[in-house]
Amino acid sequence: MISTKEAEKIYLDAEKYMYEDINTLNSFIISKGCPMEGNCFYLHHQQDLSTPLPVLIYKRINYYTLLKHRHVKKMIEIGFNAGHSAAVFLHALQKDSIFISFDICEHPYTKECFEYLQSKHPQLKHMIEGDSTVTLPKFIEENPSEICTYDVIHVDGGHSIDVCLSDLKGAHILLKPGGVLILDDTNADEIMCFIPSLENLGYKMLFQIPTHTYSHILFEKPM
Image (cartoon, rainbow, N blue to C red):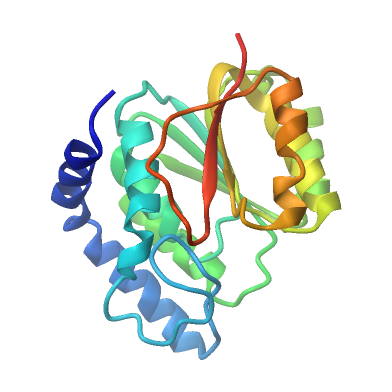
């Protein structure tokens, strides 16, 4: 396990190569004239996108460090939005990895952001569009060979209890033993309430640098 200082240095050395992607994603959002959802760089509806918010850097460090120190071949993200977290993940993944996104695509910038990142990063294979309470179970039903094959799954979709429950059920089915579940926005009660259930299933919290804004928890699925 590396120290916080080492993790910060590794990430900051890499972040400068992410700026082109982040600035391009921001330009798509601005061109649509609509507010942006919060993410690992900016607060919800933040208007000044010139500089990432310093308080969110440890969230990005945790994301990047996790993927850099594990052999991640397959990953799913539930909740792509404008692709800011996906950009961090994609810069950390090996070129031969597979990254699949699920998103409801309710914002006018989402598809354009996805297409841009896909053009830059060969790991980004598919965007499965629609309500994840429908599309995720359908994906599992139609692709039984994908069950228990994903190394990392990032759950960052809808925040209602029903949606989060459905996303976690799907993630549990697709995540391989020893894989990592990234549960985002654990500051929300509707999401925090599922932590005891995950622990009862044998999921263990992994070490991470503490975050207090848009907090998240890393869980390892039992073998």
